[in-house]
Length: 263
Image (cartoon, rainbow, N blue to C red; front, side, top):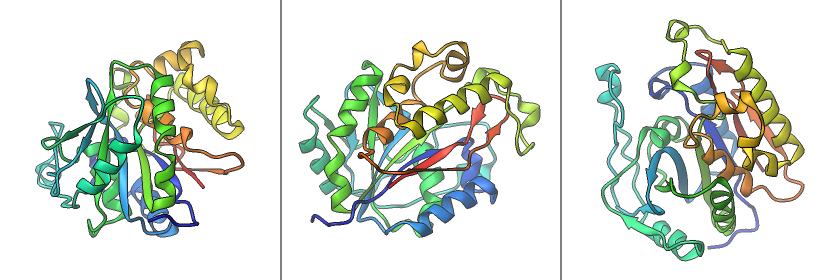
């Protein structure tokens, strides 16, 4: 099915898994976005929390809610998001990807990078969700180019979501600021502001080459996992498409919740 209207593309800064069960400014921001965009036929989510050797797609009809974390309240560990999968979409994406031979996975399910945010967009869990993994062997340009191969999905009612955090350094988190609404170290704010400049000016090359952007970026992106989903989102931006930022705040010193909608 091809439609004349393109679905938007989202990058969601997901932060703590607790956002799944909390009513806060970030979960409310995701709820509002869910209300403001067309209802998708299905969702393809690129989560920071599924790194693999090679590229995989969840292909089961009923993905499990994967609690890939520890140390949180039982209420969170008991949380279920029983969205259906879509073997049909998994096979469609597999056929679109030419940069590699994407595999079909029957074991992973939905990790918290996907369900902790999608549960606020579609609380009834009635939109099928497929996850696309991040090949940790590949460089940022590879991921950006692979994402471009997914562009046609936007015309077929598929909502593509990248879920990570633009600034994400867990080793430097100020845990005593866990319940403080807004707090960011100077380097985190500097890196986040520069990223937003690159995003709004369409300078994707500088973001792909993030390792060349100085100390603030080195601290903001100590590992690529939470940053790469942003590149998947930006790769799908078409010429002239506007970017809207929301949830644009730092938390716990070394994380930013900045999210964006393209289209």
